[in-house]
View: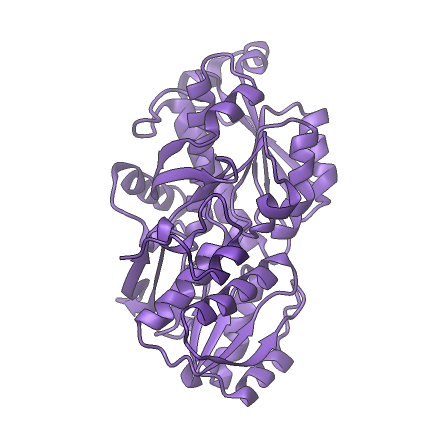
Length: 420
């Protein structure tokens, strides 16, 4: 078990006695990857964003509407745990041993599927940060009370990817996919290929590769992709798997021969900047980072993160900040002395502001956020990573309505979708 405990306080809060802090603190459990291949590209930026937000909130330094101290005036105290450990055991420890007021975290869809029913069983206010499988509220917890997800599902990624390829004039005659062999990768490929069919692209699926999560070596899969001569390759890898895929496939010419789209590609920017082939299509899984709108919160967050950590905030950091601000909004809407149940009731169906713009808790009885998504082609400008040829799709274009599952909505031809 790996647990890190931090009381994140600034200014006069540092002078508080231990007894006062214990009484007045608001404890948040934060499960992120602290070890393994996902720690660098995901766990580290998520942890850093959490530390930044907790410190700034405790000091009352976040722009409005979040410029009040802590959460309902209580100093935030964080307990970081390693998501690479046993998810169920660590979650129970946070709730039953550490007595946290809320849990905010999780990147892996597999871990989210494990934790989702526990959040309801233990009646603990819980916000999933990044995991994307639509199964969470469609199959695992269909009547949520305490569980929320403040980021879009994989469906938005897949539908947006298909629309971007069509709108950008990509040759979709021969399509291949390489996706991790678990809920996240399977859901992405299902929704992407179904979207191509719904958009009547006439695509032939020439190769479907499903390596295990964390495989690390993709020589055989890259060979299969090259042999199938695809015009487009769809990839939903994340973390170290995505870095390894790029480093192994680019030198073999895959990006030169095919249009490669990586739904999680923005997370590569600060790590292997010069190794990502220019022209590759990337997204940030929503209106985050280089796809974020200009507003006071986005300007503050991106500048504060870079000043403190010396690097740009990639989308995992943006999504962590969003989840924390959503939790603050929920507890403060519920009022001083609010319990987790009070905050959950207040959060359901809420719209709140974040660095990414307005977040609508619209689906899954108000427990699942919907947001738009942008795609663009990777480019280096003066040595700095950015995107060109950007097209943004609003939430109502890439997300199913509240009364339909993702698969049924796509099969129905995106019934009710509103696209510019």
